[in-house]
Image: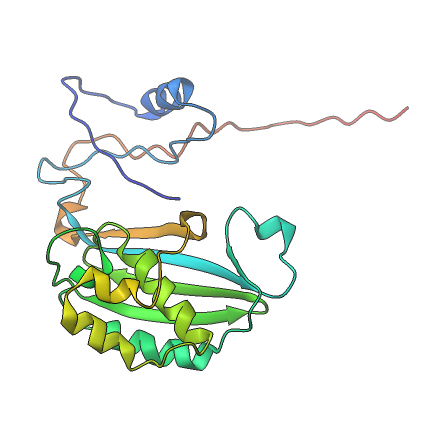
Length: 217
């Protein structure tokens, strides 16, 4: 799962490779810094964001793939992807998503909202300017019920207009978190420009191998 962070430093660095190595040296092994880059003062890892892309994976087969068990929700019941795509269109645009989150009003617009298949693996991808707590998981939960043909796609605008979390709870409960991941974060272009007289970004230390011998016995 990609993520960005920023920090201020009183030091002026001519090279960022040492900082890059030091950060990875103190982080736990399941967290790695892939890039360290200078930024202008206006950049903020949270407030410079223009949109985020989330993806939820569903393994739609009677038998769960053991290699997907930690990264995809298992639905043994055959899902109707066309109904889910039809329902997803109702989420597009600017709405009050209060019914889909345990938080206050949100009129941010998911765009686009895509349901695509790769064999038994169904992936639901949504991009938006922001999301409330559990909003994506609640939307996916409703799409699952629609895919199972338990409720029609037309239920989506009814729940949206209700602005009531209890209305959603009549039809679906939030899906578990392990199928959800953050795919990417998009930032304002003018906040991504590099400052003048700054060191180049570090992508990790590089070394040149001049000779490699493989002795055979």
